Every structure is written in C-alpha cells, then in structure tokens.
Image 1 (cartoon, protein in one colour):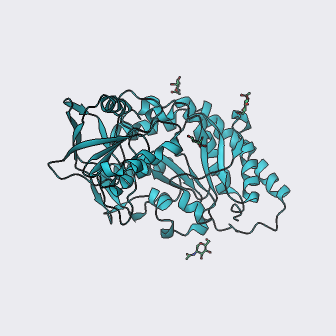
Image 2 (spheres, rainbow, N blue to C red):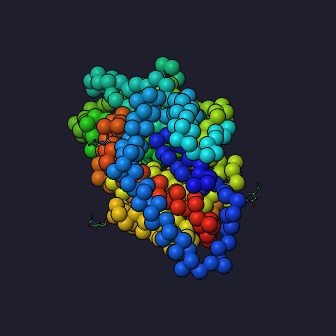
Image 3 (cartoon, rainbow, N blue to C red):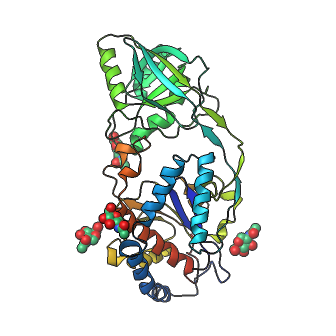
Length: 403
Ligand SMILES: *[C@@H]1O[C@H](CO)[C@@H](O)[C@H](O)[C@H]1NC(C)=O
Ligand SMILES: *[C@@H]1O[C@H](CO)[C@@H](O)[C@H](O)[C@H]1NC(C)=O
Ligand SMILES: *[C@@H]1O[C@H](CO)[C@@H](O)[C@H](O)[C@H]1NC(C)=O
Ligand SMILES: *[C@@H]1O[C@H](CO)[C@@H](O)[C@H](O)[C@H]1NC(C)=O
C-alpha cells in the first residue's frame, strides 16, 4: 500500500485513500472487465489479510488497541485533551507498524465540556436522579434551575399544553420505537421546549433497554430560539415521573449543569475526525477515493452500506467479493454516517459498516458503553473487512469513479 491516511474520531477509524501519483479520476477508458480482473488479482492479498486478522498474528489486535485507548485515556470527546492523548497513541502505533506517511494535521474544532452536573428531585420526594448533559447544551447558573416539571409524551402534547410550559422544566417521556424516530426528542427537545417558554428540558434516554442508565448524545439549538440547558434522564425516572403525575403529584426538580461551549476552539494537533466530519473544506477532497466510517459499532458485520455512483458501487461489490472466505460480501445502500456525510455531500464515495445492532441501543452513549460490550472475535471480522477494502481501494490503479 502506497498511501493510506487513517483518521481517528473517538473510537471511529476512517481509513482514507490519499492521492497516489498515478491516480486518475476518469477511468472511462477501461472496461469493467479490466477493473474486475484487476480486483481479482488481490485475491491472495485479501486471503493474507483475513488470515492475519482473523486467525493469525493480528488476531484480537483491534480489540487490544481499542482497550488500550479506552483504559488509558477514557472518553475522547472532540477537541478534548483525552482525544489528543488518544491520537498520540494511535500515531505511535501506526509509525511502529511501519506505515508510510503517518502524520498529524493541525485543525480547529468546536469543543464542548460537560462539567459537573446533577439533578435532584425535591418534590414529591427527595431523589437524586442520574443524568447526562446533552452535547452542546449550555450550563445552568451555578445555583441551578429549580422549577416545576411539565411532563409530556410527544411534541404534539407539548403543543397542546404550550400555555402550561412557561417557567417549567419540560420532561419528555416519549416511548422508544426505533432510534431514528425517537432520537428527534433528544436532538430537538430543548428547542421545542424553549419555544414555549420552558427553562430547561430533560429527555428520557433514547434506549431500547435500561438498567438506570442515562444515554446522552448531541442536541441542536436553533437560531432565534433561546438556548436552555438540556440533559437526558433514565427510562426509569421518566416512567416514575409519569406515574407521579398521573397520581396528581407536583414534581419539582433542581438541575445543575456546568457545561461549557468553546465554539472557536483551541487548535489541537489532530489527525482528525474534523477532516472527516466538519471541515472537508480544509482538505483537498479530490485526492480521496473513499471515505469509510463505522458509526454504529464494530460487531459481526453483514457487509458495507455504500453511497456513490453506480459504477463505483459495481467496483465495491467486486472488492467485497474478496471477503468470501469470511462470508461478508454484501453491499447495501445508504453509506451515510455522522462523520462522513459532509464528504459524501461533497461527492466522495462513502461506506459504512453494516453490523449486528441487536444489543447496541441498550448501551449506546451511556456509561455502559465499555470494552465489556465488545467481542474480540467479532472485531477481527470487522477489521478484516475494513483492511481488505481500504487496502484494495487505495492500491488500485484508479480512484473510484464519482457521479
Ligand atoms: C482472542 O480472543 C478470543 C476471545 O476472547 C480468545 O479466545 C483467543 O484466545 C484470543 N486470541 C489470542 C491470540 O489472544
Ligand atoms: C421507526 O418507527 C416509525 C413509527 O414509529 C416508522 O414510521 C419508521 O418507518 C421507523 N423507521 C425505521 C428505520 O424502522
Ligand atoms: C487537489 O488534488 C488534485 C488531485 O491530486 C490535484 O489535481 C489538484 O491540483 C489539487 N488541488 C489543490 C487546490 O491543491
Ligand atoms: C453467509 O452469509 C449469508 C448472508 O448473511 C447467510 O445467509 C449465510 O448463511 C452465510 N453462510 C455461511 C456458510 O455462514
């Protein structure tokens, strides 16, 4: 492999292909049969990678390296010192592995700090609630926000009861249907509550299962709508408050959040998600053949989701056929992922790992998301897929054709 740029975003690993001298964008002169033959020649390389990652010396290596990051530096939010430390560790690992052109790029990134946070139910009984502030939320004043709760189960109910919301803490107790649907409450809950005059909002965690675990994630403010502090609470507390309300109890909560935003941020020396996520304008995207992300875990994969031209899709299908020995050859639609969408929108073909999510939303974005949920054997398969695809795409004569 001549040029391969690994980009790290938290636990994400995005192998990207940077330009090699012989790269051409326009492969229209070659027939598809010629491209197919070229890919078939990588059969032995693919087998060697699979043997190494799944059965050989590199067995469990991705698990062990992830464990090193998780155990040594802990959570690695964008722009944090911990992410910086994690990037330094990966940088050393890649250099020690003998990869060429391993380098760090300085970037600027907006940065959010959680700070100390707590929520205490004062009425109808004293009860310390588990919370996690939502990413980008503002903090409360130091003395906190103490207010009565307005509990709703949907945005529609909030609209119907808009006149009751002023000066309250809106608590959303929306049922979990599926992630894409239910996550709207986490993302937009604060804005909708602020529009009707609430002081803060608390959102029932978007989770398929709970053992009293808050599940955090990003939320978005809207221009022209007051910013109010917002956090997630547990499924258990949301349901308890719902029962309290139905018995006629008045609920009072004191919410304290020390969260802070640093919008223009410090400049950290990172090889970054930033490149992948927020600032594709800071790099020359025409040098990149493919952008890949595994945003939804690294469990046993069934294949890749891909977004790109039909011709590029046909090529990716050929590349994936090299994974026949581990039976992970499928190519699905919709390669979009949180950290690569900006690239895809800019025209770069994108791929996401499609893996087994049956237990994912029981620990997603919670303090339970630890190495304990990971399975080294499943990671070996995912690593083999990742490595074969990035190796072959990076090494092929021509870049993936764009639309
Ligand atoms: C890899 O992990 C599996 C599952 O924990 C274990 O059975 C196996 O012995 C490990 N292999 C190596 C080489 O450590
Ligand atoms: C999620 O659930 C809603 C209904 O609650 C449904 O309309 C939507 O199609 C579901 N989405 C997925 C991805 O299953
Ligand atoms: C971007 O990369 C392409 C392909 O390597 C190159 O032809 C072009 O000159 C580069 N553009 C800039 C602004 O560096
Ligand atoms: C290979 O994968 C396909 C699709 O996921 C599955 O239906 C089939 O049972 C698998 N075959 C083997 C031998 O595991």
